[in-house]
Image 1 (spheres, one colour):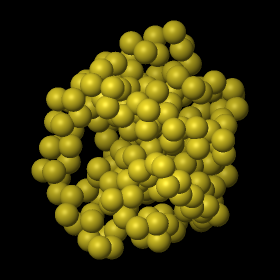
Image 2 (cartoon, helix red, strand yellow):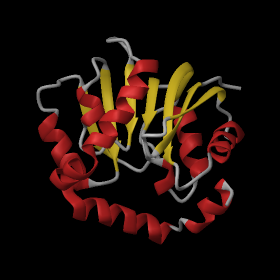
Image 3 (cartoon, helix red, strand yellow):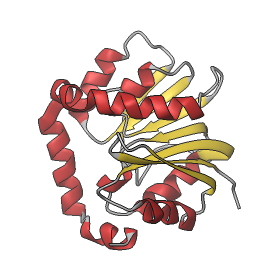
Image 4 (cartoon, one colour):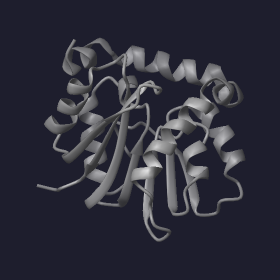
Length: 193
């Protein structure tokens, strides 16, 4: 199945179902179920990309704020799920340079060329239109910014995942796989055309 076929299967109604399932799961249960896997993904990502303290970072699909806890930069985390953000707010209350926004990754509420670094971990397979989400990632990122994007292996092959990113205009893409993790990884530098 190609990425575009996967995209067609994810309807807007299904997007609502995904939101409801994360809200039903809630922050505590989310952490119990996914924390270990997510932390292992963050280890891989932060070995390759480490934002500097003066940079502005966007964590799309920040969930309960686990990645944001590990960053020493100006951070903005977005998530579609109100309940996950409640847990993230509690977790991040001592990090004054971190802000959380309930938002849709396909319609980011930020101005153009704002972020130095972008993380989207285990996000894109939950969206109806990967192209819209990636276009938004590009829109809000500064030229030369770094991006780490992952997707569940069950949603795409590694080749399909890389092609979806390349077709969307990301360049200098480095794909990475780890047999012990459920995601494919892509690291890219954003070049504005």
